Length: 74
Length: 380
Image (cartoon, rainbow over all chains, first blue to last red; front, side):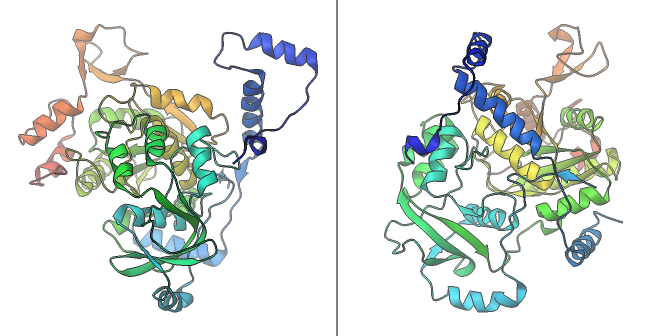
């Protein structure tokens, strides 16, 4: 995979860039890009929320029957 | 009732329907074939049952590079362990071909080849395990295999029946199980050991803050000196029956080999438990480590790199029995010096058990009674 496919550029205001740069000094982040990537990943993960039920009634009954036969459910 | 989302958003099962299987097995016998060993068979099952969601097949070059360099799939999802199918470099296949994956001569899956490629084994080993030392069991495994790989989606066409089937649940099944039990928050516990009182302390401490405990022993190839799979399962069965509430703890197996990749494997273990429906995952000292290749807390520190993992790691640093407190303690709750503490040493426990003796103060009677029944409780 080539490098240009792995990364792209996002613009942020210069004062914000400078503020982030100051704040990440002596932290584990080596660049503003690293920090912004970390924060965005965290935000994107939160926005994914929880899973809804994804089973058909028939599938679910089969699974429950198996779980009962194995002693996992009464 | 909602459960935590699987890694990548959905459980990616890939199983042929019962009505299609006979025909597909006949077709597979006419295809080029790649033989699986027991470890690879388990990988195929995990891919097909959604344990490794969102992966639907063995990794191609781009996925492998992403995992080795960034510990992420090309989609940016965290993924730390290569899932590879090494093949004989003479296997005459190309992109678009179908290959039958066989075990003991019988087809078990069909793989649609997306690519065949070579990759330096040394790089795979050193990046995955953080060492190129051939004495490391994971490095040894990679170096003994082929440096040619095939990537592509697999579809299971025959469901292998192994040992311990009564403990073998798929992610779709555990998710229904957790929901039926009314568990919204579930903590997963990974193990390759028989339980001692320290493990019980960790599990119950975590369980206090969530709805359910999912004990998920790794069943598969281990190194000599590890406990045999049946011993692990029987001892946990005894522990759960005697010391846990039935509606708060369940056990099912994870059929895979130990890689001994330390920090990377800890994250991989967490991802797999997320797919089973866990919201939390216990990470102890030197999780998935071997020898002295990894620092005691490296497997905890690595989680800082994954704010988007989607499962919460619970870190336990150390625990011991404090004679002064009269209870099991950890480094945050006990002020007494070391001379009051008795550690739960795995080495000491094995030494006692090898002599047929109960490790004093470390193990429940019911667990010891189970181990005593086995003439050879350890992998040789």
